[in-house]
Image 1 (tube, rainbow, N blue to C red):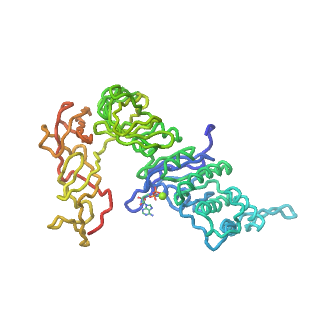
Image 2 (image 1 turned 180 degrees about the horizontal axis):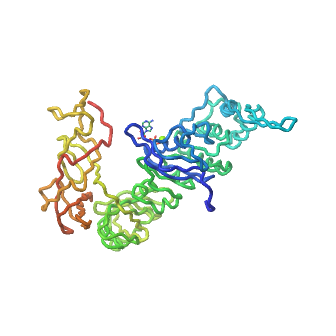
Image 3 (image 1 turned 90 degrees about the vertical axis):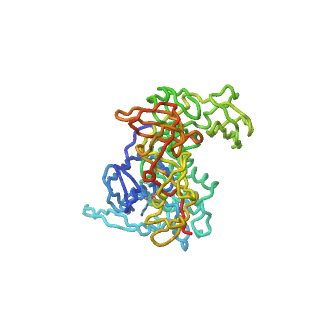
Length: 503
Ligand code: ADP
Ligand code: MG
């Protein structure tokens, strides 16, 4: 997109709340006329809800949607120049291809203007003629490459062909905007790749705006002019595929787009960052002591002789990926993925270097400490290389512990939580630092102390897994001190990271 084009769609501070769930949380974005925009994000992040609000099937709880500058927030779907293709395309099985596509057209009434002999004009609503319908259907069948299929029953078509009929049915109405909600989700990989290229081609030929929804990053990178990345109902980044790939705004985007090595790091100087057991020069300027996420693409990691690397490690896996090898290196406790045309065998020791400009640094926004953990058979929780007392009844609403240590919910169903995965969240003020390594429930080394005006923010990093405890404290500590941490059970908040079934 070189020249500036006008916006066809604007979303201003749009939210959609269902009961307790905030499906879409205050998003703003625009789509230019003729653009191919993809909304990309993991399942449940609010993509479909966003699309349905643009289509008019769903009304925002708050915010505004504009079409060509006009407010359409509460205009019904059939009054919007928009058509949608869904993943589960509902074709009529008893109708042939022609009739499936013509179905909507036959019902539609369009205003036709006549001029009377006295020169006055009048307008009335009429159906399309048979000939008009036939011409329109023929035109779209050509576009989706199904010219010879008019008379075929849709049930005899392959998945890919059926999806093309669904697309034809949507574009036969000549919408200004085509909305596509994971339209290729039901197809196999090969068919999906073909359809991606065909859709891109169709977009070019039709010249209309496409808003496409997918959870597949490769699909988004291949097809889009612009990608909108969503997570938990919010927008993480908007940009061209290259922008998003090269300059991810945060660790979530980096991880979601392509292969990445992501490390938790600390700035040791304005242009130096410590991660993966070494200090590296970098080109991003952040204050000393700042907690950061560091992203390094696998193709930007170079292998050298072990003694010449900034760090060294052992190859623990190597897979040939057609053009390059993808190798995983274990260095200390860190795994680093490398792509290289040259293969190193499993077990070989290598050195690793990364150019300063290939080290991407992103500021970490710290509200809470968050960990992946699991429940033990003692109903304690393990995370951050420690075992902590906790209240497991918060994991299942209305539950209590029985005398055998099983959780029982309000309806008397019993649960065994042993080894169940949980996400643990602990406030920055809720961690106590203890001056020796053995009295707390986990231990580590102080890797950073930042003075925050009225308190210090201290980061304690565990030795094995390099998990961080970020602690707000009024006491002073010294960098490199070995300490332990203690957290009271009531300060450990948890939610289930997997489904648990009653016994
Ligand atoms: P995506 O398409 O990205 O997978 P959705 O937009 O379908 O996500 O859903 C976003 C969130 O909103 C999810 O947590 C989902 O469970 C919730 N949600 C969606 N539709 C409804 C609904 N009709 N009622 C209640 N919750 C809903
Ligand atoms: Mg969806």
